Image (cartoon, rainbow over all chains, first blue to last red; front, side, top):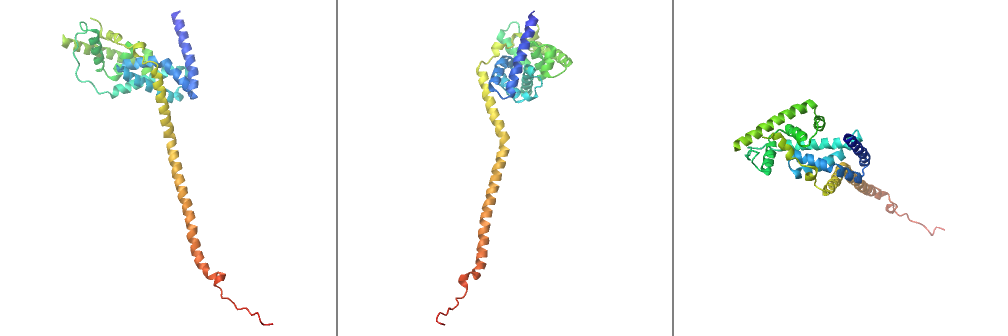
Length: 186
Length: 98
């Protein structure tokens, strides 16, 4: 039942996207505004989660909207705008991660159990910097964004098998660097 | 000890915590307008420059064609000066022959 209502909601969202995309193609700025309002929260959330910076995430989300509007002629299925803009946002986040300089030393920040929530948060955010952009993106989309393997594969434009292997590698690497960081502090 | 990977869920941003608010839409639309203006300028700039260059070339040609006949007329005028009626010798007239 819940799934039915979810499906219906998705169908409604797709139907509304369809009409908005048609209007955007015709250059209607009100439709653009409405589209931004519909997808604003989701894009800001994913960009902030990947980049771990709300303001940079906001900038990337804005860029994603501009790019989507500019390249709307490339959208084959007008109902698929949601996935189209999500993929653009993920790609822009990857570009930002690749352009960042690698971090230096791992900070020591307690053992993760005794430290405060803020310390743990800082430690985890810092440790994410030690993952490659591909591993980091896969881990964030799966663990923070709670996407399925298929959805991660679609967002990153890679096969599902690649997502599985990257996720495995990302989890192992993250656990290892977390243990290293907390061991040194103990 | 908890799995470190589970800590990621705890620090994830939610829709509410990452939402920049209504001003986000205004920012996107203002960037869109600036972007459109820039693209329009980039699209028309080569044509505008071409038109200006063509106009300048046309002006130069017009000026040249207006100055060239003046100098030709001067030369021809000089040559024709010998043939003007004013330069012919005045013939005597006899009025008392009857």
